[in-house]
Image (cartoon, rainbow, N blue to C red; front, top):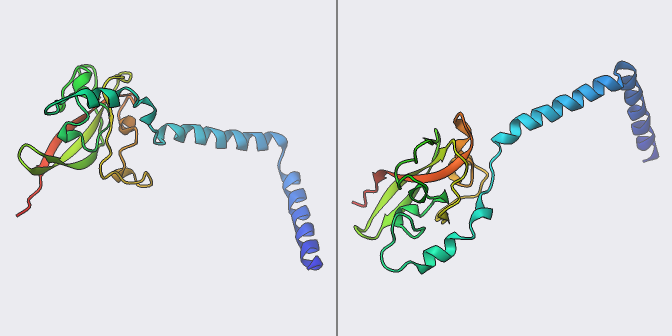
Length: 181
């Protein structure tokens, strides 16, 4: 066992000395700087969590009596929404407010409409380009999957593919209806 450790020690020492002879401190700093820059470039691409902004939405939704409106988190088409509702931010349930643009990528969910008893496929798109709306935050996440696969997770800044990655609010557009025949 001691022979293995002695061999490992000699090999490590030889390789360290060889590396030290071929490189300088300056080249080491350049390499570390390049690695840090590469990390800083990929950082805006990483997903982020908007759940810290969810405090005010719960009380407003609980106080609503009767059928839910498109400004309520209980509205049927918001079953998989995660974000501020554009219907509270100058837009509607299906259109972005003026001055914003719809994200180029989105997530989908299947929601049940209690009025007609049908299930609908909905596309949730973030509206981008203006600072966060800050009103009517909903985080329903029915059927949400863990965040290890981007296409099935809604807790992501979907504005990252746009010219401006600043998130404002979220819309819900019907893209299909399920056929239970």
